Length: 166
Image (tube, rainbow, N blue to C red; front, side, top):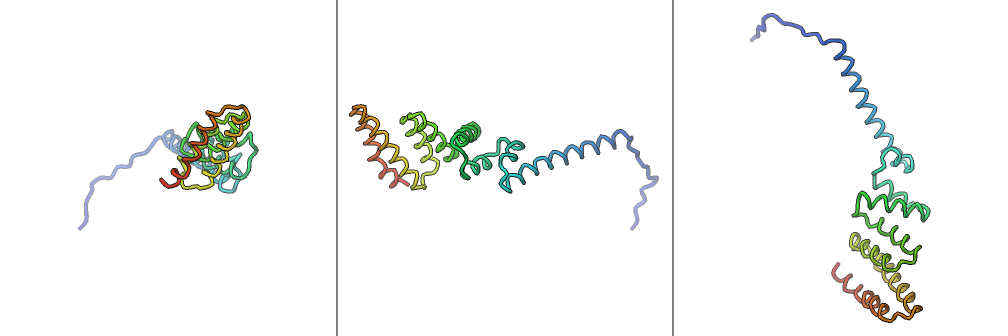
């Protein structure tokens, strides 16, 4: 069976439409190549260059922290992460570090609690939490603030219950 379509007409597209289409394809290709370079840089461990291209990529920032960046870089990266993603436990660890530099024990405890909420199966975090509570109680013991010692001591005694709930 053969279909007769009658007279076939060809439609010619103007040259400007062809140029616009090619330009759009080139721009899209360039954009994806640019992103690809960023992801590849992160893949090979060049996180600083990757973050220049993809500044909101949390994975690259956490990898930089894990690879042992300086304390100041850890704090800066932690703040950047928390501005875009508050579910990353490691970012709260960086904030614990910053609060520790200021000897702000209350903030250290709050940030460590947030870290534990987001990584509740990591036993190491509970041990670090206990150490922070111990440092806090020593600090207040030197200042003679007995009520605060009891308060943070009670928090330390709640750790086994926290572990049982996990």
